[in-house]
Structures are given as structure tokens and as C-alpha cells.
Image 1: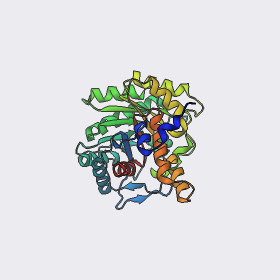
Image 2 (image 1 turned 60 degrees about the vertical axis):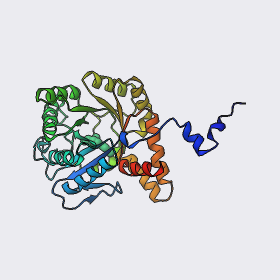
Image 3 (image 1 turned 90 degrees about the vertical axis):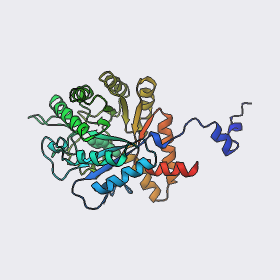
Image 4 (image 1 turned 60 degrees about the horizontal axis):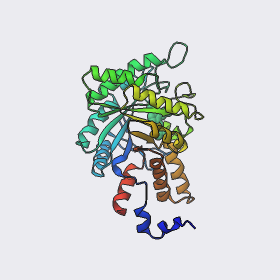
Length: 323
Ligand code: PBG
């Protein structure tokens, strides 16, 4: 009889043959920064996550670096919004201010990344600008993404992360960065980003104004091949890393992208994934820490090199203690 249980007999034996480990270096912590906030603001649907002030942001980034996290991903929450999301391009806009603060606080100890997308900055909440008939105008939006990426590079960002799912956005951003003299700034493409209900709590986190949905640009959850195709196109357009998002409901897509990708693959454990585990744990229905670690191990096992997770700092602390 085959006896696979032999390798499970003791903790040391199990550790010896464990195939998948999560490490702080591969985790990225998303951070929200609210313009004009004088104190961190709690996000009710994401217990434990806050909208930072500029000051508390600096502290969070210093902590991320001290914990050895791979990076931080910045999102801005502006005070005012307009049709074209002009706050995203303003060097004094909240996201560009946050980048300068984070780069300074990181002091090279963790990678500073930022979201390139207009949804936090537009009055209608869409990821791009609207044409006269109300649809999101792909090519006009790409022109704004070009300027947004360059503004972020000028603020010192190391990685720009286009998340708006416009066709050709990676090529446009790469071209704009090179033209402006930032060939060393990397592009982490949100390649296979699905129109997901699991983004729900994020909308509260950034005070999104969106009515309706994003199904004309984000992908249909039913489509696997299309996710692989989007990742392949982004690599051809010059993406330095590609991403699958959300993570847990899309592990099949993640596995397939990871098997084919010539570049590192990231996965984003999104706000709704965070909220579900926190909510169940708060009820006493699930072992919180075990569920967090299991969820991250499953994402890594499915092929993610890099994982964006709101638990990054906590998990890094947990890993150092348990070693
Ligand atoms: C777009 C963006 C979103 C998320 C990351 N970037 C929201 C959306 O596309 O609706 C979601 C992240 C999360 O849910 O944790 N700027």
C-alpha cells in the first residue's frame, strides 16, 4: 500500500516537504490616503483598514519597510472630483503627494507602487472619461493615463499599476514613461481584471461615485481564455509584471497565466475577499489566522509570485514570530 501519511507524521516532517511558503518579500500592502484627513478614518466594511492621513501614511510605509514587505500600493481619495478626473494629473493631487511621502518614508526599503486609474478622481466614478453618448472612451482615457503615469513617475513612483482595463493602456503608458525620461519605472499591469462583486468594500474605501457597473471594460467572470489573452497582450505591450484580480475566485485563471507568463505574476486578494474572512471570523465562525494564511498559501500555490493583500503587514509579523 502507498502510505503518503508517512510524510505527515510530525510538524518537522510536514515542514520539510511543504511545497509552498509565503514570505513578506512577496507581499504588497495596499494603502488608502484621504486628502485633508486629520486623523485616520476607519472603513466599516474592511475592519482594520483605514483611510490614512498623509502623516499616518508615512508611518505605515516605514512599518512596511521594517517588516520587509515587498511593496506598498497607493490609492488616493480626493476631496473633489470632476468629469475628467483632473486630480489624478495634478502634481499636488492627493495620490502624487502620497507617492512623494511614501518614497521618502520607504527609503528604498520597500517598493512604492501606485494605481493608474481615474475612478477615484472622476465625478461619475468610471475608470476613464466618457464620450458624448456616455460610454467610456478608450483612446481618450489612454491619453490621460499617459499623463497620470508620468506625473506619478515625477513624484518618484517605482511601479505604476494601470487598473482601468483600457485596450492598449500598457503600451501607451510605457511609451509615455520612456518619452518623459523614466525608462526605469516598471509597469505592473492589472491584466485579467474581472467585473467582480468582490470589489464592493473598496468602493467604500475610496468613496466611489460609481452608479451602474464596469462591464464594458472589466472582464466577464465566465471567461478563462480571455484572461490569458489579456495577460499575453500586456506582455507584448511591455508589461514588466501581470496581475490576475480578484484572487480566490480566479485561481484557475491565475494558474494558467502563471504557466504561460514570461514575466512575474501578481494576484490581488481584493477587499471583498478580506471582508468575507473578517466577517466570518468576527462571528466566531472561522479561525481567522488559519483562514488568512490558507487563503494566501492557495494563491501562491496557484502560481502567484507577488500577492497584494490587506493583511500583508499582519502576516509578515506572524511569519517572523512563527519562524
Ligand atoms: C480601480 C481599482 C479597483 C480596485 C483596485 N483598483 C476598483 C474597481 O475596479 O472597481 C479594487 C481593489 C479591491 O477591491 O480591493 N482603481
